[in-house]
Length: 422
Length: 188
Image (cartoon, rainbow over all chains, first blue to last red):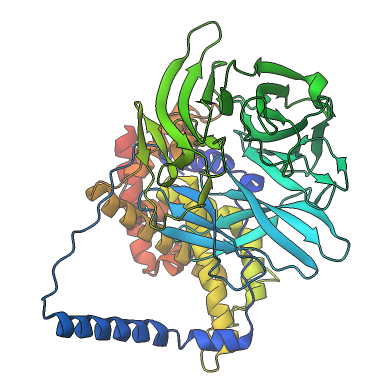
């Protein structure tokens, strides 16, 4: 063997060893369809052929009736996306196009065209009813974790079930599988999902559960971190209650080093629906927010005692609607201010001991009173910041680029459409 | 290459056999694809697509009469399918690059690529040079060298995977090694 051959064999072996078996994306579990469906597949050409014939007939009819010749429609073009831009984003949207128990699907779309890449219907589990609540994206930008509320129809209790969604490059096939550690027992009839985030190294998943009231009882919010390799979980709970107020944790993010979790706690005076904290100052439902951090490496513990306050409730009418930690201790905040059903939105980056940099300003509109919902979601590499809020004409989703909002292409904008991860 | 769970020569490749084949050779196939396409996500996609394609075929074989498919040698067949998938991926990438749709990874993006693997501490500068020189070779030569020096296949086995004659394998390997040696500044 020549030295070239020896060097080649050595280099290939060493490079191959870098690809660890246990870190590879698992292969999909192909669905097994009944025979009649498989046989029908071979007649699948009938459907597109019939559709094409219908379109031709309609066009011919329209031309006959109007007497106008067909004009060429302008081609749709999309702006080139910057380097390292996430390739996919996830939506929870309805109505479902897939027959099943839920009206909602999780749709994965291309960020460059808005085209649907793949669609995951809600799993149909006998005696359970599942509803998708949240989607978080793994650092690879193409593996998604979907959080479902699973209601046991026999016992009238609920749990959190989290599935891993993976799909082939073309999206021709996808599959859902439980993550290790599932299920996550709930505390009442309507356990709800607050927020969910995957750690920067992709090995841990953090999620929160919002407070619910049932028969006059309330349960404190909790933050759970699951080791995706082993299923071992840590839970921080308690210590956040304040007299006469409900508390929820609707937002959570990992610091870029993966050591801490930054979360947003919201207190408000009790209102019939504890999800709604949108009152005006001094009125029931007016929210008070804090941004806190907790050491993600610690084991379970008391959330109030183990967390540090990073940002206190702003003065006046301002509310911190979301927060994302940066690599050097800075925080990017979405701050809403002003009474009424319209608010000023300022996205600013705060550095310890320095004045904040304003990244973006806009107006946000509330659908039910005071607006409170603005979500900031960093891309897996932390390079781009996705923002979603209600504008005057419906939901707005895009990323902030030099003080401007650049919209994500979306072929099916609908009120209530939610982009939850990318 | 014999394995009790892999169908023998001439046997049909049913769903269970496909699953067993990929369970045992998943990592090897991904590594093979990685050497061809250069980044792990694409390599995993290629292997997944081949896996799903074989499953669909095995289902069709089971459901539709007269569609029975037999595979003489499953593992070489799958390796060939993976290499075909890599060629398609590279072709798509080339087209995307030509029309300006290429999305290059940001410098700080956590993405496992052959290039990032090279930069690992345990990969020495010498190995990095060899892998870079290998990546510069034409596709067919690269395939022959990877099959021979990573998988350790014989000329006959490489010929079966690539669908060429053993003589062509031999000459291609010789030319590839000579080109590699020249690029590395070694006497061939």
